[in-house]
Image (cartoon, rainbow, N blue to C red; front, side):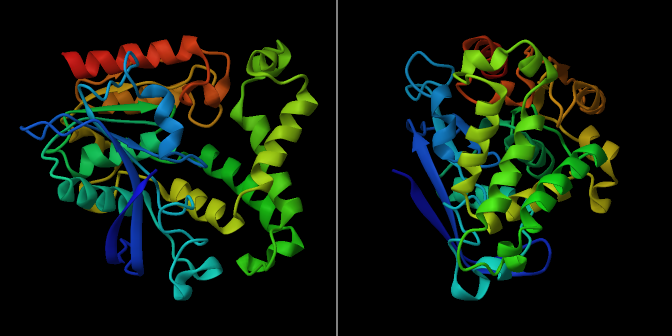
Length: 331
């Protein structure tokens, strides 16, 4: 069962605010006396705090007997304040833009309230990686290590275009009605999931029928399951988090731009892109790793595409991520 941290009226970096903001989270383990054994796991697109549980437990890569693990939900994911779960004046289509920075600022308030003084590692897959970079830049004195898995420090132009394609698949459904729908835009949601499926995996995943390892019978089965999965989601929630993804960029003008921002990171960093990721290609991550002082570039070898880094997807990928975590935490 998750808990809620009440933020009250929460000012956003855009200048707007959330009148009654709440951050949903779950903790595992106990904070030590020095208050420095914290590991933060920010949620990813369509994920929740529970999505990271394959990484957590005795004998797993994150043992609650040793670490105080905080898994936190992004604004817009349906558990933290979201278009589907907000005060009446900001519900649905009226929900304001929320950025990666807003999530990290809210998370900082949460951890401070929990008594955390230092974070040993911020680790996250996909949009969790976006937040890990923002943490390292925004609160450098509090973070000693980050592990961005299959993510980036900003949304690339190509990534932006992909996201526009899934957005269009959803919003062109007449039932969407500019976000003012009274019943779910099912056709648009199914189209969203169908387009997403083609980008979530690699060419090898389909060509070599790797999908059978994940329980899919055929390409058609992959597409149908992704359509069904997204059919259950709230359209405004999806687009709110998608917008935060598109606007992600640690290189704000006040930080001197992208290269300067990454150059200011003092946390130990292992950059782990998926070798066949179509969203966050390894070539982009290599550039980012080269801008972070002392960062290691360690690709996640996999034929699963972007999904390679998702917690619990397959043992071969989990083991590689676990090795990187142990290096960051034990050195």
